[in-house]
Image (cartoon, rainbow, N blue to C red; front, side, top):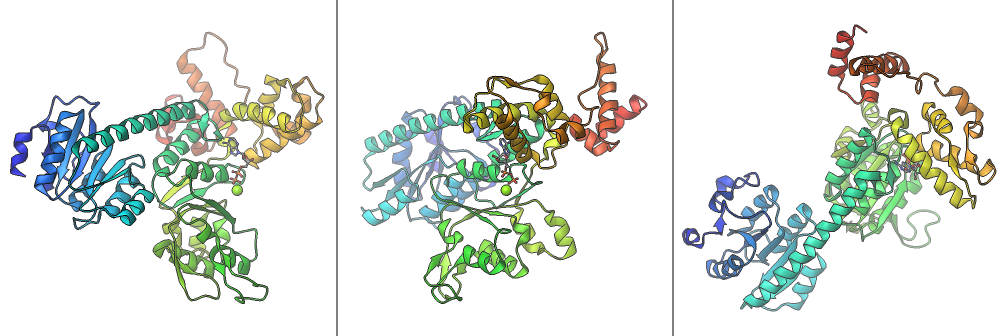
Length: 484
Ligand SMILES: Nc1ncnc2c1ncn2[C@@H]1O[C@H](COP(=O)(O)OP(=O)(O)O)[C@@H](O)[C@H]1O
Ligand SMILES: [Mg+2]
């Protein structure tokens, strides 16, 4: 490693910098422009590393060299890399495992393997698991450089696509989810952060809030998007069937099992399994599920053969699992295993500002589906819809709009009279009627907003702070300030 000082651009990472924050290790090359592609070289052979670094030194790269897999592993946690060049099996952490960690951190990373000798089976397997290229010794350095260049330009394209997608999402929502409220933006943030990982996710929210759509969008944005997305609603079947649906069975496992059948866990191998209404699982099934989550292993019903799978689990529930844990009806160990990441989907009444967007979307969607040409919806009708409490959330909103569309005459705007009577009569009048005369100071506007929102929320400070999008402490301060 001593000789690295003379290479200048390249530096190896001493153990005490393993958890360095990105950027802190730039002391060696302060002038490096940001556009240099970060490349990690993992090679315990000084000679070979020197050759590779020599190539990288000439290109627009920022190379980091480590001499064993363990160091690479730590570094991947703390720094982003576009390319990783590693020997396939010469360090303690096998190259394949290192790749799976690397791709976990950055699914678009180009992993280039170097093997001591040609091995078609190994190369095929490596490519199947996501390697970008596979080279054998003695290295053809020109070819290596070409592969790196190709990999990096592919990556720039992917990044541009992600960026475009992100901007679109920012404008409209995430995937097929519509809504720009702050509450939903928080949900999208979490989704974005966890989509690329394998972490188990628990989605909690009232019925109709979009839990299904969220689970699907996470899968679509995950590295598993080409593999299966399998769903099972635990509430829809009797216990015995849920078990065979999840784990499969063999002939004769129970009366009626006339042939072997794969369960959802097998079908979802390499992909994502969405378990809806997970709170409905019986204690016996909770125990079985916990085992699969911990070991990624199970047996089909009636079979002793153990099956291993690689499945990402997303669970959803509209019940409070936390209170079920307190009551003793849901295993606490399973609860914590499921909620590695928790997503709370806010009910529609707590993000009323999303209603106009959703209404427009559903008017278009349902009129198309029903072959009706509807001119749109009036502001007055949207106002009424915004004041209703939506106990069935977005599903209810969609159904109401569809009913309005189907019943209305074509080529006109939907209006207040098209809104079903029960929605009109229970819409709280106060909500949309916060009158603020022109000439009012900002401070006065804030006072009115707080006062009116408090009324609407039945003087529940937590709900009021949430609706206003401010912290509870801020609300307390303002209430005192305005003497409310
Ligand atoms: N943010 C959203 N944007 C557009 N449609 C939505 C949104 N959330 C839910 N929906 C629609 O509302 C209905 C209910 O959503 P779903 O995901 O099944 O809710 P849940 O699983 O929470 O009961 C579906 O028709 C879904 O397409
Ligand atoms: Mg659902």
